[in-house]
Structures are given as C-alpha cells and as structure tokens.
Image 1 (tube, rainbow, N blue to C red):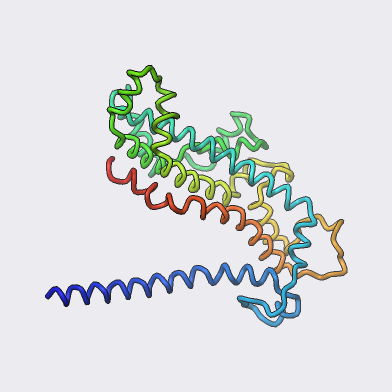
Image 2: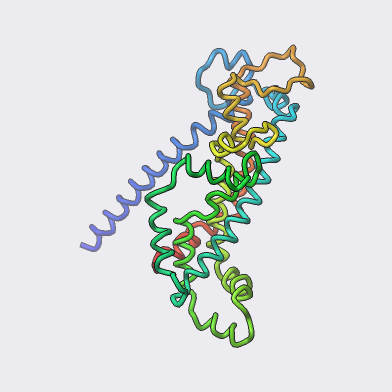
Length: 291
C-alpha cells in the first residue's frame, strides 16, 4: 500500500511538472517572438508572419527608438511615477495597516468594513475624474500616483501580517520610550521586509503598466509615460514622431518598431524581479493566515 501511494505521488508530480513545463513554454514563446521580431531584418520579416529567432540580426529598430527624444521622455516619466508612486503607496499602506492592526483603535471595524466594500464596488471612472479635477491634479504627474494610493487587497494582507507580530514587542518598545512612528519604522517595517518587498513589486508593476489614467488626466505629451507611447505606436503604425536624427533612407517596418518598443519597455521592470524573487512566497503567505 505504501509503495502504491509513493508511486501514485511520483506519477502525480511528473504530470504536474509536465503541465507546468507546457504552461512555461506557452508563456515564454510570445516573449521570444517579440524580442526576435524586434531584431529581424525587413526581408526576413516580410517572409514570415511568426518568428522566434531571426537568422540575421538588425539593430535599426532600436537605433530608431533610441534616437528620438519621445522614447526617453516617456521612460523618464515612467521611472518617476513608478519609483515615487511605489514609495508613496507603500508608506501609506504600511501606516494604515499598522493603525488598523490595533484592536483598540476607535472606528477600526467601520474602516475595515469600508475597505472590504471597495474590494467589490468602486466609484467608477467619472467620479474619479471629477475628484482629480477638484483636487487640481489635472495634467500633473500626481494624478497618476495619488488616486488609489492604497490597494485594499494589499492592505488587508499587510495588516494581517502586522497583527501576527507579538504585541509584547510593541509594548517593550513603548516602555523604552518609543512612540508610534518609531515603532512602525524601526520595528514593524524591518520585520515586514519580505511583505514590503513583495507588495512594492506589485505596486511598481501596476504603475509601470498603467496607461489609461495618463490618457484621462494628462494632456501634455511630454508627461506621457512609456505605456502611452507604446499605445500610440501600435495605433500609429510605428511612428513615434521624432525622426530628425534618424537616417530616413533606412526603411524600418512598423511591426519591428512596435516589437522593439515593447521589448525596451519591458526590460526595466523585468530587471527588478531577480532582486525580490526570494521574497515572493514568504511575503505573500505571511499575512494570509491570520485575518
């Protein structure tokens, strides 16, 4: 009986591994296709509608997008709102989670219920737009950061983790004269490093990939993030508007330009993953047990 259970477990693990490998291949093939197409020559691209690795590499598409001020302007804006927005969102989320973790906090239950409601219902696009207009954030980068500064789901998980920290640690810190701010930033934050790293990445990826808010709230093209530029390239047949420093005698297919911009827009946020990968499982699971 023990042998049969062991054999069935091995078969189950083998089947699971095969399924995961298939999913991994399906996931990575589009990425290889995008990167490969961005390096393809005009001739090879015209002969094939789908390619993975080109036989001859061409850097004309990257020379084109890197020779324009538009691309670097969008990259600069994306870096500003991603780094600044992630820091602000994480600080506000940690402060609110720390406050809601105290059972003696006045109005704690009402606030928790209000947060849970936002997981199901949202104000909608028009109320959010009116709110941004009334706050004077229209056509400012703050409009891409401050609205939605706290994600309710992330807040609930981080609050649950803070609640799992023994109260004796906080009480001993108070006996030593530490105030609430000192306890949060000197004790709770270091103990929550795994959660902070994980949810900071969630916030950063969400901000980096967001483009609809910029379309709604930003009128100045110089303040467009990189994702809005990518959207314009898709709908404008690869034209990013600045060709003054480019050799126009070299024809670059719009499809190659699209793939090159997608690759260039993906690499910066992709480089962050290796540094926080070790925190993923631990950071998410820490606050998922105690509610």
